[in-house]
Figure (cartoon, rainbow, N blue to C red):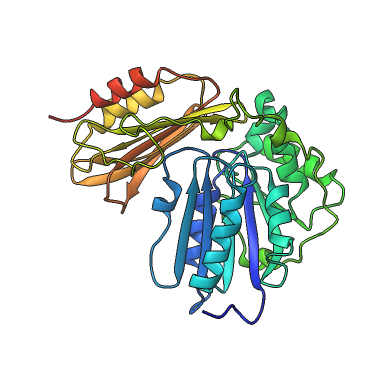
Length: 349
């Protein structure tokens, strides 16, 4: 299959954990120009893929997910291979890449502008979403990856302005206004709405990372040479050569991972497992030391998307119907077995 004649307009949509990147991309996909084919590469830090399932499916949309690490480091080779496949198989009119919330953009930018893709991709504005409320969170402010997501962004959109206080939004605008080089655009938005014209701003090649080693410093190989992102567990999987098992009713598949100072655990439940949502919500909402929880959960004949960022959570109905799956990202290793037991206790008889 031949490659496109002209380089494909490409954008990176960044932002810290839970800022609303997937919602923003969904809105862009729903409003893409008629007749255009778009491809999206979604990267999830956790072992269980959920974001892809939350994206629309239809003609002219090509969604690919890479889970279980960051495409800026552990999954770097997969990034190049997957982008190459999307170019050759989907032949999109636009490519959007959504790194994980703790992903450093520099490695992605280097890959997309390097020799492999320099004649095939036209990397345009990198857009970073910012929740202004995190500027009061020392744990986020101490994270150098968070700062470089802003440093390397051409466009910064202050998101969640419907729930943030005006003083928080104004403080964010003041901080962004002091950055150099100046951003091409700083704006306010809610629910991650990105004006399509912002995507076609020309990338500022003068933007530099302030902390280029920030991510690598937290991803040193574990004893024995195993990369932290490759430490994962499956109760039914004994070796990588064995095909991934399928869950049985009441017997979910569980995998864990860790890296960048965070721990993940994800479960995939059988399609027939049906939860009492209010009991499950109580279990998930009571967990401490949690950065993020995402899940698609069957309740009766419907499925809902559960989304927790910090101590805030919400839920909504989704069209997804294949299985239930839950992913937890935390700052410490939690009692995963105990959490699984509590979740199974929420299954309806």
